[in-house]
Amino acid sequence: MFMDMDLQKQYERLLTAYIHDQREDYLYGAQQLSKWIMEQQIPPEEIVNFHIRTIKQLLPNLPAEVKASFDILIEVMIGYGVAYQQTEKLASRQRELEYEIEVAVGMQQTLLPSDPPPLPGVDIGVVSVAAQRMSGDYYNFVSHSPSSLGVAISDIIGKGIPAALCMSMIKYAMDRLDEQPLSPSEILRDLNTVVERNVDPSMFITMVYGVYDSLNHQFIYSTAGHEPGFFYHAEEDRFVDMETQGLVLGVQREVDYPEYTLSLAPNDAIVLFSDGVTECRVNDDFLTREKLAEIIHDNIGLPAQQAVDAIRQKLFELSNYKITDDQTIMMIKRVK
Image (cartoon, rainbow, N blue to C red; front, side):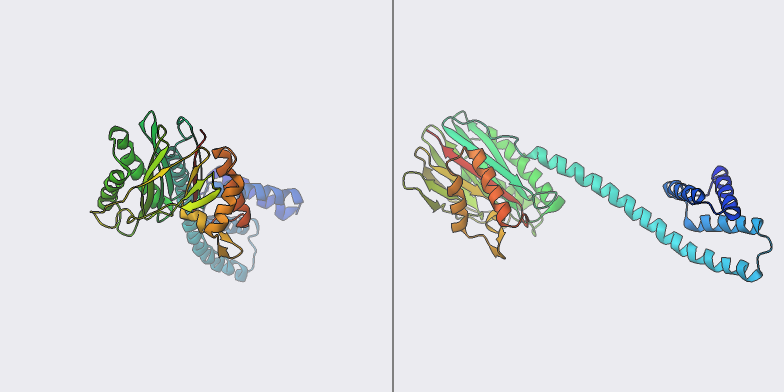
């Protein structure tokens, strides 16, 4: 891009005025002019070249040695100008990528349910926080009938846009489940086939999928390599590790996923979470399941959403307000 005539005349007037009278306001004018020049992306060597031409016109009796030195200055600025243009291209591309990532983040948020659906006699809360701008955790709710609800938590081993793409695939595969009264084991087998066929072998997906029957207050679930959750017995006031057995999704095509059944009495609760919770760093060490159970116990009496929010906040404080991995916590409480 070349300097237009108006800019050249403005620059020439400013330079001429300053040579004859070194006033501070002329330097301020030069600062303002430089901002406009940068906005127009005029190469620095062009500015230097025009400056030299103007100087030669204003001061024709400059020593030959000074005039010769201008050649060196122009050559140096040409190299600088090339680097400047490359930097501007990279900055422009970075801005484009930032915009694309923001769009992807917004789209990813639409994949997650806004609120847990109502279920008679059951209180559900969920919180999910990304370690970076895009999360590798996913959760979902699937209505199997007016009295039964499917719940899922998934952890995509990986981050960023590839994980978000996997999340969208899992989401749309699960959208078909409303039309199919499948068991948790059958659902994981179906999702495993989808992942094995469509996801790069270097990426794996863990998941727990369960169906809560509010008529009998039973929770039937299967897991695919996912972090074991907790089952809270209110009458005994104790936590039990949920049984887990099942290969992560996408490793091999034919996989069987055992099913487990939990019966909930009033005030019993199921707490599911991603491994970003148990891998939370506390005093340079990982959070123990015993410590996590203690934190959950401190908040188990709260409504489910308040409880998971409080648990998440406590983990944030214990980890010195740093998140190294995505964290998702879901609580399912029988209230009557």
